[in-house]
Image (cartoon, rainbow, N blue to C red; front, side, top):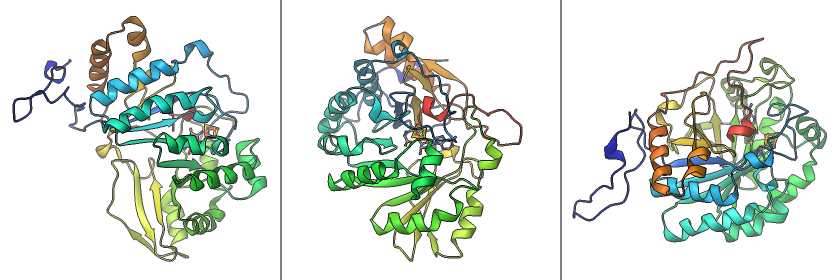
Length: 350
Ligand code: SAM
Ligand code: SF4
């Protein structure tokens, strides 16, 4: 049921209106972080993420950049302080800089704390300077190997040099880069210590991610899955890992690698459940709001948005959706089980 109090403007201690109520879910978690997938398309086909022959959505199903901007505005008015643009590959969406330019006004006004993106890095040489000029200060670049042949194999088509040049361009533009690597048992497990040394040597933090059962792919995910508990034990034979207290409200747990001085994160949805501190929701490129990456329930904000020009109606739909945010996800990877969630990561946005 919709709680009407969450729709009415609150009053500050001094009696002045303090703006609309923030988004609080049934488990008292404040929703301050929105991840937005702006396209399901990508110029790569990473083997754990997509199948070789993906069918992409027809363009008419996608929210326009103006619609995305309007929706983001509604979330920001309700207390969302951080936006992450993702995909698919966000930088292959046509005119995507237009959206960054529009969203940067919320940084200028102070309503938004951070505007950031997750990218495969292939288009960064072209866009890094513009992104920096729109207030993007930190980005995540996904990179699973530093071996050009392996890179081509994992991504089924990518050129490692293009990504490395993109990372260099982002750093030259003054952005802080974090490297995200999916830990893949027989593919990059042996390379992880060297990748950490490389990233930390350039002053970039790194995060390791466990493969999640999202979307049907050709490979069996039990063959790809490397529990990060195992990866961490192996790392401890080479490095001294000191746990850090900082939690960003996100799923990563961090350590300091004493030998490099750099920060290393572990995103472990399967071996460690992080849902109790979840502060985020995800919007797909078709305007479906997923309250949890690992659950099926979603709210169709595109229908509401296209039915009414009134932002109050849209805000009401958002508030109602947040009342349905579940306590946590149900991921399990078991042999011969279909994907726990049929959507690919590229649809919900990683
Ligand atoms: N294309 C961009 C990129 O690769 O950074 C943004 C979208 S991608 C879906 C976001 C992140 O999700 C990437 O770091 C990718 O490695 C990760 N990812 C994709 N499929 C995954 C899966 N099944 N399990 C875990 N991580 C996955
Ligand atoms: Fe594309 Fe990112 Fe998925 Fe790789 S992980 S296929 S780069 S969306």
